[in-house]
Image (cartoon, rainbow, N blue to C red):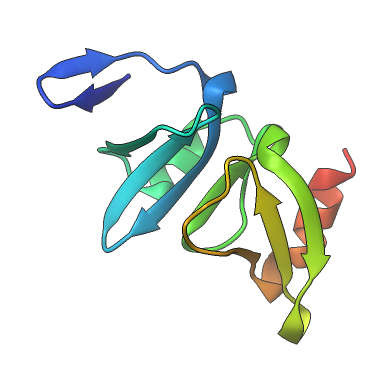
Length: 107
């Protein structure tokens, strides 16, 4: 459940592509490209969402498995993800999470 203006909406977990934080605001991006501000932090969402479907790739992003189109090697041991829909800011898997991320992807 999220609040949009004065309305409360229900968003199915399967419809969430990724969540990101920007300037202390957390946004949910749905599969159809809607960007909605939400009241939960990424830390809280990490504990609420199914870890089989969602992975915290960095301090800024929490991504769902179906949203990942491609992963590319990046400098300094990071990975760059092509997400669907395309994010405004590059989605990078931090170097310290790459091994865990690859294990998660392989499940």
